[in-house]
Image (cartoon, rainbow, N blue to C red; front, side, top):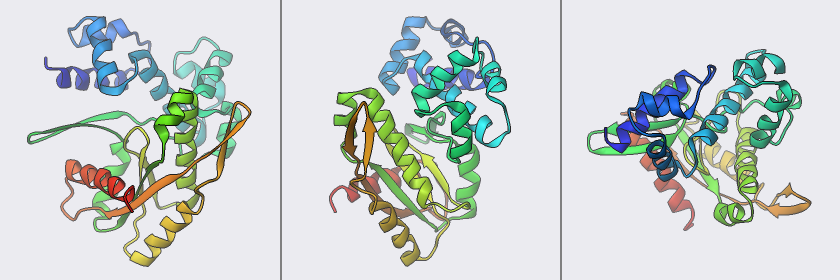
Amino acid sequence: MQKFEVLTAALAYIESHLDAELSREQIAASCYISLSSLEKIFQYAMHMGVRDYINRRRMTMAARDLAHNGYSVTDVAMKYQFQSVEVFSRAFRRVWFENPSAFREKYRFTDIFPPIVCIHEEDTQMLKQVDMSAAFDYMRAHSGSFVLCADVKGCMPLNQISRKLGDLAILTMAKRLESVATQDMIVMRVGGDEFALLTALTDLSAAEALREKLLAMNGETISFEGKEYPLFLWCGMTTIPQNLNLSTFFGNVIETIHNSRTE
């Protein structure tokens, strides 16, 4: 199999086994490749190992179960194959910077690490980080509405200080988007530090007001290991195309973010 096909198969296998016993060896065997080859593909495509990807996906699904599905912390720990609540809580804090019991009281946004989606349309192949199960039907129902496209300004220097600091910046960005969104809007993570807020708004002035509300938070700091780091976002606007094509839509989001950097 070609690398893109191997990655597609591996990601599908992981998604279907997130709440079951799951080893890297099983995933490699399901794709008929060696474990070392599988790890190389993951590192090349996503800059992380297989185990890290699995943990981030499980912690995202665990957050959803805690915040929206009524699971107890113990139930979630058992569901995602953790030996104890303590081990699960440590893994959860590494992704969410919050204890699971406190998380369920504070959060609505849970898709900090949605599945990597392999999109193959005509001659186009791309990887996008988005939960299409919720987003696709929403986008079709709200074609022509505005989308806020944002990313973290200077995320790479934050990652160079610490990968955890970079993760905290991305999580803070998601919180900011959620804070300006209403219940009928969807916050989507579409890349490493790239987000889209599906607003369902068709009025330009209302969409611009929402964008200005988000940008007004630029410069507010995040706390990490006793230091304060100011966080700034770029944010542009596009619309959901009338004839929805995923590669075109994601291309528009990335182009909009790029253009917002030169404004």
